[in-house]
Amino acid sequence: MTLLIAIGVLAAGTFAFRFAGPLLQSRIQISPRVQTVMATSAAVLLAAVVATQAVTEGHDFAGFARPVGVAVGGLLAWRNAPFLLVVVSAAAVTALLRLAGVP
Image (cartoon, rainbow, N blue to C red; front, side):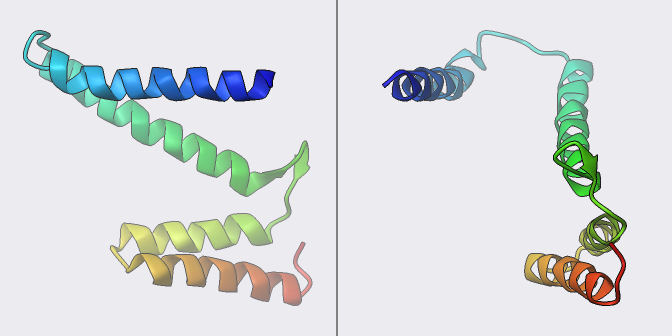
């Protein structure tokens, strides 16, 4: 029951933030520098999560196959490849490397 209450509180807080954004946009002026920093920080946070998940499995090193697969996917995404191609290529490279015996 406590878990459901926590989920409900987080959902309500998220909804409140999403609802308050458009309402307060005309009242609060954010400088272009702060807007740039916020956009950059979101990208950095996403990159940190991807890097952490690509390199670790639990508390241990995940091996070399997964980071190479993620790097291939990142390269294809950077080159504006279709999303399906990015995901399938990353998975295929990882699977082929593991099939070849690379941990």
